[in-house]
Length: 130
Image (cartoon, rainbow, N blue to C red; front, side, top):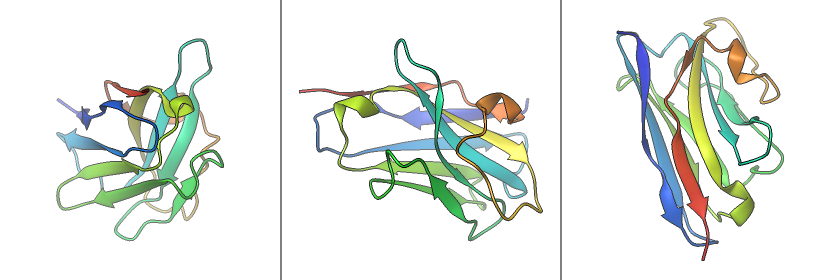
């Protein structure tokens, strides 16, 4: 079965850090653009970060997380990560990873809707609160 399986997340105080992982099952992540998205209650889903295919892919971030979040990929482990530092209450929401076969792209947009991605993770809750 081809799927993305997420792990990590949870509850953290403002200013704290959390890491999310997303592992591919049944396919290789190397040729895929990878993205992280989030959705807070009552708000539209938004792109957080994306990274182009292959090792050393180029990363792009939403302005709201630039400098605090880091997306990375390990194509040997077929896993994509999102390291979140200096978390704020407004970072709370359900986070999703996604993958889209796109081995030749040199650019990805955090403005792309998650619906354009072929594979999506199951979502994981991140809550930033005292």
